[in-house]
Amino acid sequence: MSTPERALLLENIHSDAAWTLKDAGYDVERLERALGEQELVERLAGVRVLGIRSNTTVTAEVLDGAPDLLAIGAFCIGTNQIDLAAAAERGVAVFNAPFSNTRSVVELALSEIIALTRRLTEKNADMHAGRWDKSAVGSHEVRGRRLGIVGYGNIGSQLSVLAEALGMSVLFFDTTDKLALGNARRCGTLDELLAESDVVTLHVDGRVSNNSLFGEEQFSRMRPGSIFLNLSRGFVVDHAALRSHIESGHIAGAAVDVFPVEPKKTGEEFVSELRGLPNVILTPHVGGSTEEAQQDIGHFVAGKLRDYAADGTTALSVNLPQVALPRAAGTRLLHLHLNTPGVLATVTSLLAEHGINIEGQLLATAGSLGYVVTDVGAAEVDSFAGALRALPETVRLRVLS
Image (tube, rainbow, N blue to C red; front, top):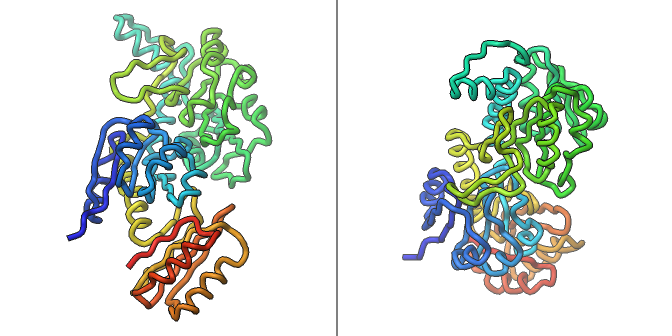
């Protein structure tokens, strides 16, 4: 009886992920917390599949210390906590959940827009302090107000549709061409959006160029009395500048779900310049933390990890060429290689030299890498596999029987 493959799931990933992997024959270890670099290396000995969320960092050094690792699942949207290039160079596939928590983030954003526009945070604080204030001063409907969305991807575009259904006028800015949904209007520049919006909400990704995207200059360009939200990445916003503009009254309120430095586990002290402001909603990075979203993420990402380990399927991988070839009977060869001319011809020539017939084959390339999946009718491919591994272009070869 063969020993089951091992999987390590960190940061309280939903139990459905564990069950998905257990059903595929994995021995699954679950931890509620994130791990530092040294402990992560120690825990990864013999592990084939790793699941993390946003607080575990996978560096090149971690990958060097985990030669058995096949795949990493980011059970969230962002993957900037993983060295994607280093993973690709070592033949480790990385998957995330680009769609699963979209609705949860959008609903949180909408609820915060309504709460801030109605000044519910201040009304709530007054009531808990025993103060009864029915004044409508500063309280507005969202209908007819202008929502400016920075980043019109999966979350931004869905927010656009639902906000319009509430009667808001939607503007958006994105650095790439995006189809405007409904009556949304694209802005040519960020400054144009800031000058026209009553509410500005950020939904950008974790690329390095977005670091410090929003600071003193951008807050100064926002309309007086406007509202600001960031449910994207913590390093995007200068929080000291945000506090200054809130205290001056230039920004009427804000909601922030992500921070430059976040506690690693429940119970650790949260430190931020934004604490103590009555018209600021602070949430502990829970934009996608609904039971529905976490369950869906668990199913989705664990399924991707399972399929890659079992069949070599890389559909929706964020760092490897994407290949999905229906499995044929016999042996499957998974060849990740440097993207140089002639590799596929070399592979097919080697197969012919060894008298091995091709039942199915698919190649994809992305950047510096190529990935060819080949199904062959012959079960005995040891000599061929050795020749393929010896090619200078080979990054990683797996043989599945």
